[in-house]
Length: 333
Image (cartoon, rainbow, N blue to C red; front, side, top):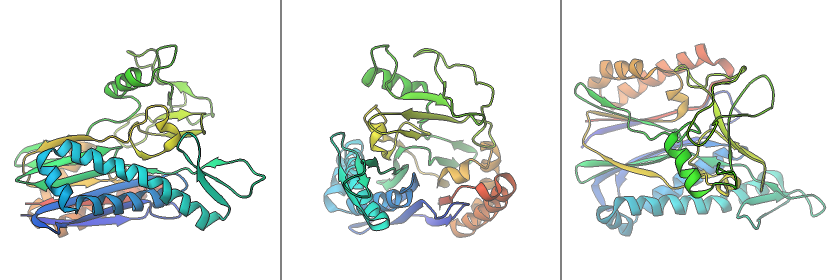
């Protein structure tokens, strides 16, 4: 089929919270599996690595391969649901291993921890984006939660087919209103602008139909001048997240933040890029497309190396010591 190359570089945090995998299916080498995950929260590394391991093991089952050919949407939803469920145990184990104390699951299905019986339970904060691409019977089947996006390129055509799971997404807002609205008709999770000047939250939506104008003190989350937004909740545990679909983040799941992926099919490509937001936040889309076009004939290994070298320089120039972890998988025909 094609060549695949992967790279991951730690940003300015204490550990790399990204994870990735690529390989042929053990029961059918014509099937290729690609996974990119970006963890977040105190136990983000545990979340991403555990979900990556679960998804790989589940997708490599003979029964899952048959299910993918029969109904790829249902098969990938089952895989993501299993990864979301298994993360509870991963987070509980990691909390006890790293902090001591006790961990359990509360009545809201949230993993919680306490140092000793006389202390209150605290939510174990951790979750992960996930983008899974499966080369199956001459097409790509792609499932995604969160903002680890994808670029498809063939000839002079390119697509950025990743769904928008941000709090500013009208489609996601409609889903929350449909499934998790409060008495006022608005979602029970608060969708707000993430602002620098204070901890006060500024509502993102004036109503279910109209985005509010950005407040003073707002900031851009990337070089494309996309405004930073958040989903927040106070119950059952205080939590916040920059997108509305994720694995883990159990307190927010009580308010409609969803582990269910959006699944789509794509035709063959000359080049396919899956990457965490540590890559995407560095580039205007047209610049990244141009960079990949210039190097796509070099093969996956060299093209991936050149892109990561360029991204490392750009990250240092743009974000300095606060640069995010950067992970990419690149496929060339």
